[in-house]
Length: 154
Image (cartoon, rainbow, N blue to C red; front, side, top):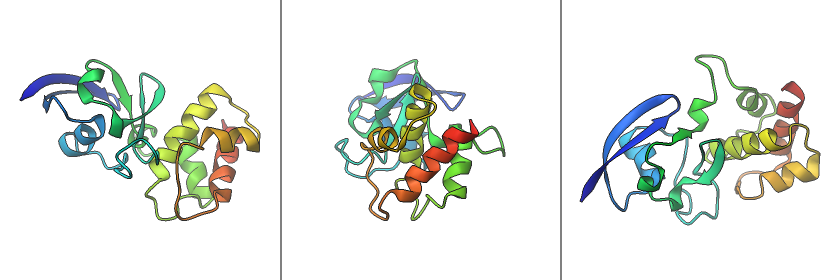
């Protein structure tokens, strides 16, 4: 059974017929066509699916989409302004923190939450701020460097 749902995603309003048990991740990927949030663990344990809902980071794989009717959702795709990268996106590229790219969008959204809450974090605060996001490629050094670089540029 489907029910109508309205989401503002990255500034665009979407009115969608959505299954009652659909997760926000499934709607973002399958119905809206975004590739940023990834399906990693499907249980809120890896952070690949992190998005912002009304400015707060959430794991979209564990949230029913209908819980968010009428809210503003921002994904990594929505951080940039047209062709100009957001400082977090640019810092991830410049620091070489993109690696395979699977966790990158979730990491950037976790970093955005951290920098919104704490604009000049130290390394311990950065590591804590991204601790809900797993990267299987690195030792996190480049990711920490990218968040630090983004904080310096903001």
